[in-house]
Length: 149
Figure 1 (cartoon, rainbow, N blue to C red):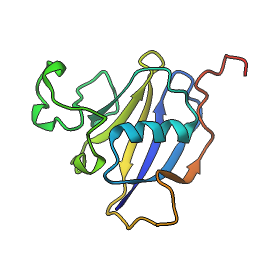
Figure 2: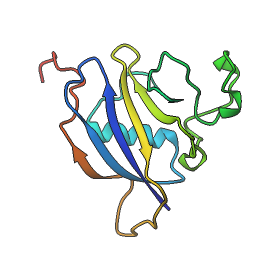
Figure 3: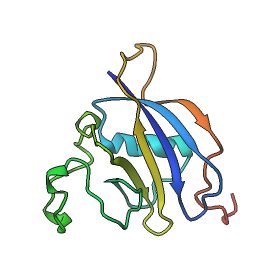
C-alpha cells in the first residue's frame, strides 16, 4: 500500500520561496527511506545530521517528541527513548492527532520540512518505482547559495 505525503519546506537559512513536493511512498518504508526521498526531491546533499520530530508548531527547539515514542512525550531525557529511524516504519507514525511530523536537516542552517499525510492509502502501481514525486510546487531551496557551482 502507498501513502501520499506532502512535504513543505517551512524554514531554513537560505529559504526564500515556497517549496512543496508531493510524493508517494510505500507505507512500510522507514523514516530513513523518507529522509533519502526528501533529499532526492529537493536535491540536497547528505552532508549534515538530521532528525524527525513531532510537534504542533514546527519549531525544533520547542516542545517536541520523537516518532515512535509518543508514550514518552513528557520525558526530558531523549537518551532513554527507544526509537530508530532505520527501523521505524511510516505506517507506525500516524495518526498524530493535532500534531504533525517534521524533518530537520542541518542543525546549523535549520532546514525544516513539514510532512503531511493524505487520508487513506492506495494500491501500488506495479509499473511504478517508489518513492516517486507526483507534484512539485516552487523551486528547490538552495542548500548553499553562496557557493560557486
